[in-house]
Amino acid sequence: MVRCFFSALAGLMLAYCSCATTQAEQLSVSVEIPQLNVSEYHRPYVAIWIEEPSSKTVRDLSVWYQMRQGKEGHGTKWLPDLRQWWRRSGRYLEMPVDGVTSATRPVGKHVLEFSHEQAPLKDLPAGSYTLVVEAVREVGGRELVKIPFQWPVDAPQTKDAKGDSELGGVSLTLKP
Image 1 (cartoon, rainbow, N blue to C red):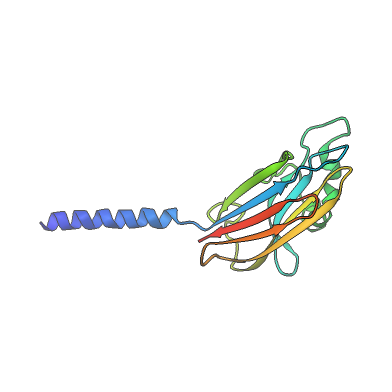
Image 2 (cartoon, rainbow, N blue to C red):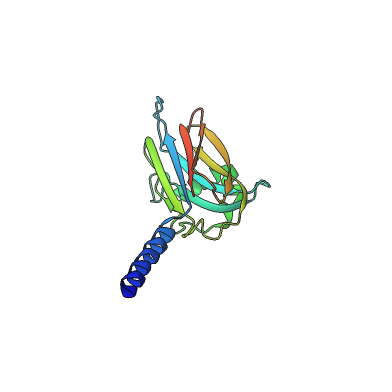
């Protein structure tokens, strides 16, 4: 009887521990690249990062740019056109950055998910932050969308913003 009790207790503790380890704070970013009716369309360069209230970049989440040599040269040549990101973080990075940079994305919604257990959110101190999404397009415009949030997360929440031209809907979903 005692042996059964301890066996059941050990099973409950194991189940509790596995539940506790599966709960991880998550940050999800959805970025919509809108369909534009223009004569010459190029996929936009996009930078997504987290900054402090002082506008200092604390984490680069993603940078989408032309990664291969094309007719017009290598895509890194135009990364400074992402002006805000370039001044605050980009000019200090050696491209490509593993886990951060990737190719430009086509029209549509693109979702990125991050966990506090892995880079770039690992060891992010508690505080007030702003998610920043910047897009720029050749023969097009430039746009910046910001969404403030608190870290760590107490309750699930979703915050939305919308661009006017180069960005469609931008959504930030936080889960404790």
